[in-house]
Image (cartoon, rainbow over all chains, first blue to last red; front, top):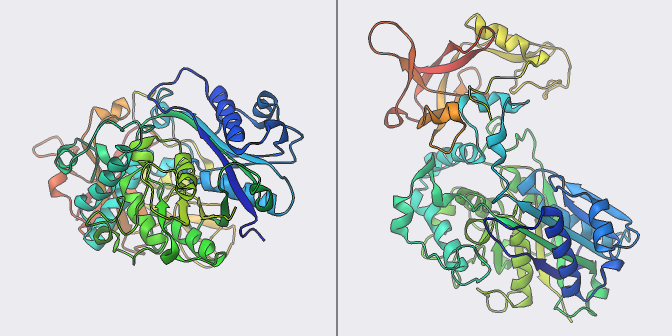
Length: 382
Length: 147
């Protein structure tokens, strides 16, 4: 059984910046070693590795550099923003089955200084040829299309999207690591922002960041010996729903029921906990509407109700469901959502800059709109 | 970086679509065995898993399902035309069959040609009809006009 068998016992991250000098491989090594230090574990004990298919440096490079031991389990998870929870979940499964005992997951990315992936396009492949030639070029265009339809069907407004952006910014303003730590955002500034892809404006988009993060997992019984309070992987699921089309989920019966719905069904099905037990949530937020869709997918409100749910500061510290308490991808750093994971761990350790008092359970999701993954994390006993 | 529009790749299994476009026909994959349609094209019929299918014309009519207005930064050819609309059309034959395209209208005055419909005049649910705009000898891109 996966349930509560593995624990996250170490986390680490690089500084976040528009440009860092170190290479992605150097950053990856630095955060892996630092996460082991946080866990009180020598990197020579690492015998499990999981990362993104998009990761630049492979397992051999990383394992040699950090002086890992004999690695017995290694895996990669595809689909960019859909992968972070998947990396941790697959390590947790490997630990639960005895395939490894000290697993590291990481993501290192220079998206801030390394250029925009869509800008290098020369000729679209298949299936992008059905969308790109018409000018649907960027991830923001693809998600804006679903957002417009969502607003049309349910009466959601830009004010609801602003609720997501403002909550993230308020949390970032309390978090010294956040890129937007010193930059408050007002509702007036949101309303006045330039368009990127209508109905989405600048502040509906995540940041462009250089950064890296890692975490370390061990069997739950071993976690009691580690310095920090253990954070148990209570449940894990991935989701690739029927007739899904990555980023452009327009080609099926119900495009607004995205991968998060399939992932949530599997996640709660494997859990003792439900949405009502979640004290704080880290919901993938490359774009503000993904948070609204995820609130519905993971059962915090009914379908089409996320707009009203977001009102009255509901997503902020002290609200009914504090979301993305480090500032998330919108206002802390955009590293394919791995920072949401580390923030989930901090909440359950009690060390967040926007700490939810007594938080015992945290949901961490990866991207809505692509084949995705999610974790229910639980504070363990010492 | 490309200076022109992004054109579809030479993909053998799509040839029937572009052949239809050059003749002014919008075609969709249809299963030879169960006669159901799907899009985008894939090797098997997702309904009955048969591998035999062909590109069969549809009416070219539909309704506007959603739209965006793209603003820079964009690739150069697209940036020169921004802000521009991109739409999704639900086909009349089966509203769960959808295509991405652009909403255009005939240019005012003589000479023909097409111009984009401005943002303020685009409405979800409005009826549209396919037209084809030659971008090269082989690629006639489907666009949509108010019907």
